[in-house]
Length: 86
Image 1 (cartoon, rainbow, N blue to C red):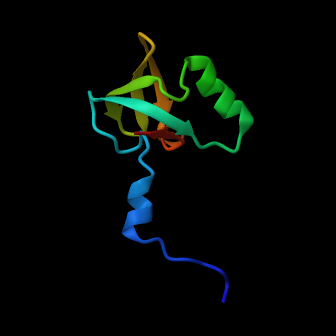
Image 2 (image 1 turned 45 degrees about the vertical axis):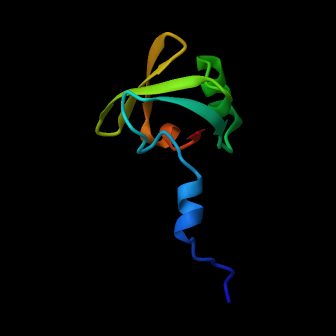
């Protein structure tokens, strides 16, 4: 009636983001899902683009410490949800 669809488990598991990924494991960036162009540009200036290796060093409450291009950065969970990994 309203156009809402239920997500099945296959659809939910298809998109894997940094949010909830395993620690100290190297992943490759598949894409960035972001409507805000400034945030996507910010991630690109850090070196976060398709094919780049990325590692989650630690997670402290809402903050993710990531290793990207021989540097460490701190991002929040909202930003971690926008980075799709393989």
